[in-house]
Length: 459
Image (cartoon, rainbow, N blue to C red; front, side, top):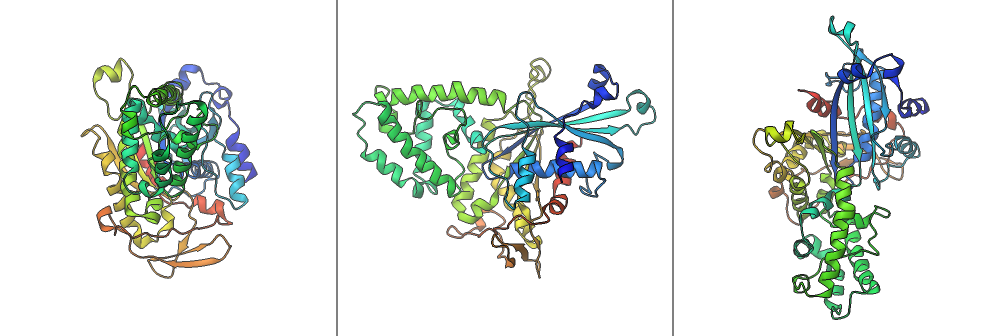
């Protein structure tokens, strides 16, 4: 495993070593820019770690993984390597592999990281291989905290607009049950006192406590998500704000509305604008990771809110190619291909995966409804970045190692194929599978990555 890590982390100057000129390298490259989009706990870090490991073993060790992937034929792979992506820190695959070796799942992403993955293919065409003997397939990946994604729609709102929408969401389930202490604090607060630093910090601290609790209970639509991540880049102590009841936020003469409006604008212009420019780069293909298990483990209302959160993606990214001028003159390329991916699909038995795929399509229908006809190609996938479970004694059972190290078998009830089929007060407990001791073999036998890459790479 140490050899794998060393090889994949060494940025190589292969083009220079092979004596290829700059113009040759330009013609050799077939670039694919991917935005990997996922909310918190959707499995981005594990997917990256698995993807890098699987492609490395497939190309250099000739391991028979990704059997359905035709666009990167094993027999034509010359080599592959990582390169930095701008000035972004390199994705910490080494740390994640160490976590798996120690029996821990990789931690949640709390900062941005990126990389270019270059796969060099030998030309198969008889004429081309003498002129340009290689083709470089270049993947660009960026990993970032899922909390940042939910903040970007705030860019298009004023403070009062955002405050009203956030407060309205808190009055509905499932947020309402977690917002009670926060609402009690606001209702008892004296807004006739001035918004001094100490008074602002009082409210911001209470609001952060609410969104931290809501996040721990599977709530996805929480703004500002950046307040949840220490060191995210915005000083929520000095420039903090919270949503307020409309009796306050609608009063433009209120010192509190004026103060929070100033702080809100600082948040947008000094943090979100830079974040969108530096992290959410122009791309033509997008993978949207969806953790259905968080909602299934809590309630139907959690899944309805997940649908709402995903539908806001159209406010964050540009989909489709609107017109010739934007595509060819302004070079503004919209996302033309989207893969919706339900991660951790190994946590349900084979007999339930059709229902899981159907549920994924239902939860994402708000997002797909906003795609313009014919301009965006999209598909739905079930993916296991690591096969952490085994087949059980029947089609609705799984075997797995629990956190105490015991090998268990679990029977499953039928999963709902859509939201309306899920009883309002029902929930489906999620297996707490430990990291398998043979994690490398199980990464190489993960399911669904071949179909996902084939869809994204095909013309």
